[in-house]
Length: 114
Image (cartoon, rainbow, N blue to C red; front, side):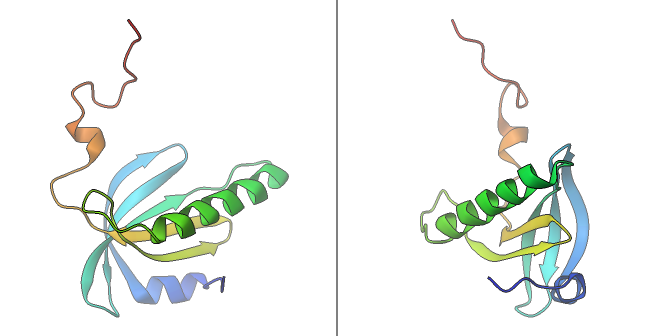
């Protein structure tokens, strides 16, 4: 994988707003300046332990590459992938209608076993 620079990512994508931010990362609404379309960018922040981070980043990249091969109406398409300064960024189609988190009746809390 060719690792893009921070400036090449910022030239291609313009961030519009932060849709969700959690401890491990954030999801951004953005615009792909090259192809002229809205996208979502999921950014996974690095963890403090460098050895764990290298493994985590590798697993995230491997998972994104595997998911990029999927084609299904219920799965967002993956358009791009990059790692800049330890932050893994996965660019996907922007799904309409809000997030799955917002649609869950318990607002993302785990279901209790019965």
